[in-house]
Length: 360
Image (tube, rainbow, N blue to C red; front, top):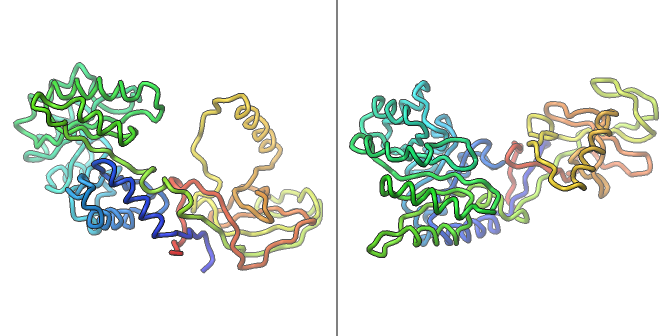
């Protein structure tokens, strides 16, 4: 089958999952494109992980997190426990309103007005209340958390969710400060993101009650759980066609002139698979900024480096990727691959959609 293929060492991949799950009460995250694996597959993996890892408390207790209300249906049949919706509740969304009354669904609320709306929409909805962090994305500010007490008789309060920035400097101190403020407003489990497992456990102990019992904590894991061992998978693309070209000949949708004698290699994968699509990143170092400037100049001249590796090097796109294939230029001095060969392709799995996954 021609296309973009992920070759997955399932034994190694699952061993990494078990290692992560065994270190802290864990809530697997399955959202978006399923980190390249698809949401139903991740839900099935989370279910299997629950059965295989009796020491993973949060997994065993049955919780998985999805991004949006629409994603609930994609995991429901493969995972038999609770489903947390990470996107804040929106009372104008009919699906979110409907799911608020689902006993398996836990809604996240990040605005005071939505606490009122969700209690109007459903009878005792299950609710996680989000605390605003230095990310400044969603959540109630620390000085407004006490309002939750007014709604506790009308909701099933599942705890506080604290979504921290990735940067580690000051992160634990922020989690400790916000966790303490949340618990003083209303006791409940703390659901955390982007905090190392050992710090999550330490935080639970630090914020424990006077009786010595630690505060219940949960760690949501997505990227580290599914993509934390890059050696467990690799991605290739099928060579679909190879054409000999001469310098100056025109090719492609845009009929650009070929820069030199060589080969046009038509490779599977395009925008539909996330090829050539990257999330913006900030260039922190001078070297990174210099590379960005140089790359930008090349792109302005009509050249862009592709993620495909042919004959040991990444090669240039002839033009931007098509929807399901890409044209890559290979100089005449290099022997071209044969039609049907598989060539390595570097993809960002949080934006990629592979055509198939093959266990190896």
